[in-house]
Length: 320
Image (cartoon, rainbow, N blue to C red; front, side):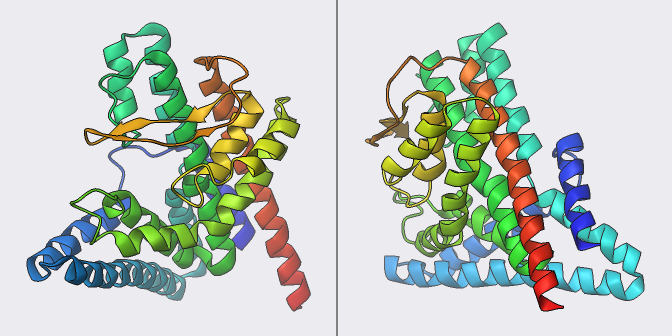
């Protein structure tokens, strides 16, 4: 039943994505983070106090998320096993973001091909944190490819990894960790102190999934008939070419598979951030690379689901 729930949830994500008006636990987690952050800021005034308050916020949000998921599943299973199974499928489905990630990338791709530059910049601003108002088409394409590569970890591989380790409640707790980082884990003046714990623990949570993405995306590159050898080599060579200990693993692997260069300087909140380049500049990046990256993401996501399912069956067999 557990494996069936995984595959049904994966099918629902591919079929439906994330309809904007459907109930979604990530929105509830975001609301909890907003409320908790306001409470912390009312009490904590110094940087030291904000760091401690940020740690308390992390414990409250992650703990409440795990507890709520576990409690809802336990109650549903107590009412009827099939109700519990349906709730588990729904939880896992909401944790996966492959379809919504692909749809967002295609929105930018369509604007680049058939729309205006202003429309492309606006669509891009929905999915990246960098300033987009002055970006040109190659920079827009590069941003989409980077975001797709990085979020293949956050949106698919890591949730499935924690699903394997601790079921839907632990995977939901991971999404709370990831949402905390996306909301407060910035290094600017406003969030540096209160978001320090969230940013660092997100790095810890993604440590293994990011490195698995190097291998999964390399195999995906081979299956998609891209440059798998370069994906493997550059994924390893440029794995530390990023301020994050995790982001460069998938980005470098995708850069190698496509034969393009990613990274470089970008503006965030009006400030220039100098980042190292990732990959080799074999050719100019092109809008078609968005399509190829979507293919890579879907293939790597399917491989991750298959891999973790095999591991789950193997562990279950060993326990018998």
